[in-house]
Image (tube, rainbow, N blue to C red):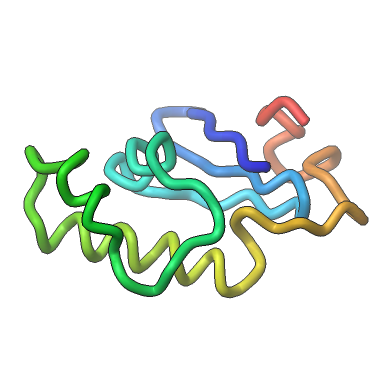
Length: 95
């Protein structure tokens, strides 16, 4: 499960499985309302349509960043051996 939050004008995603808290862009923040695991390496066509008002290259770059986090086990992780408690952001993501 992931949680998104803002703090001091910045946007973050907290993966509650891995305990990772990662800063993300405004577009990635928006994108996380549309994507669900498992993520594929290729940008889903439906996501292109959902975010059609944004520049296509920016959407591809933002998705590539999210996919990299997913592949590294920092996004939509199914690990349950840690959580956000005690993170440098004080666990404000709500876990």
